[in-house]
Image (spheres, rainbow, N blue to C red):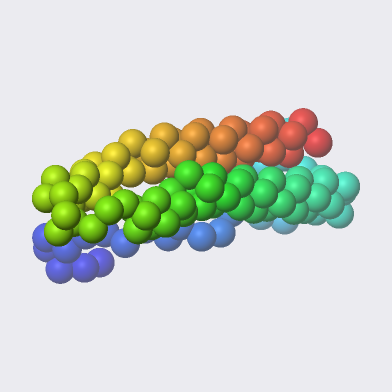
Length: 133
């Protein structure tokens, strides 16, 4: 154990105890949850294919979100460079800072939220497929 007041360390890797498969000879310990797939059955191959498909979908989604950011926010420097010199119009510097400091963030939040919702949906769909297999 650790010293009083120190946080307890948690193990976050490996198979959860409830999901471990009983391979016999353990005196009744390590019961598998209902519907668990035993080693050697076709379940691991299906799970591997589902995981690869999930990775491809997540990569495609990430590239799409990045592409949206590039298309929507990438031209901003060009647009702001094309504006008249700030010395000629004193208010134009304020417009540049307003666009860069305020107007960009709603686009980032919307794209980020869209990405997270879609990524979670992809993971949920893959988990459902793996459970059915």
